[in-house]
Image (tube, rainbow, N blue to C red; front, side, top):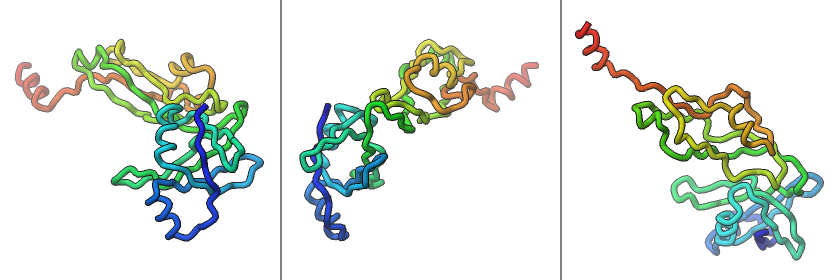
Length: 195
């Protein structure tokens, strides 16, 4: 498991936040059921390195004053233009506790339907799931390579593939579809003239 070393934050002045960030540190909080919320800070570079290895939803060992806690990255704030991380929320978990979270939908491939002139449409980019901390996937992948024109991938289709956690959406909800080619007004005018 990847470890992050954190320090407790005791100075809450705005100037100390700026100083932390200038030194390559990120202010953060860690909270969870049955524990009091702690304000902490950690190295920005260390966080980036750990996230690269465990992913956005992976379990991280957070070492605070010599004591290790299993946490997941619950939320973060970043600067809109630079994408620099400004603040991080960690949720303390144990492997058996179920968590409600969001997971990104990643689409792979180019469909047969698109190659035949169809149009790819994606309706859901994130899914709400409930899972034990160890079972949270970094993303949910859909390979659309074999999809033909008219094919719609629904939540029910994913539930057959991902059975180790609960997807909190209606079965009939569409995620992606390969739609029929849109007829342009110009083509409609031509076909009307031909008749």
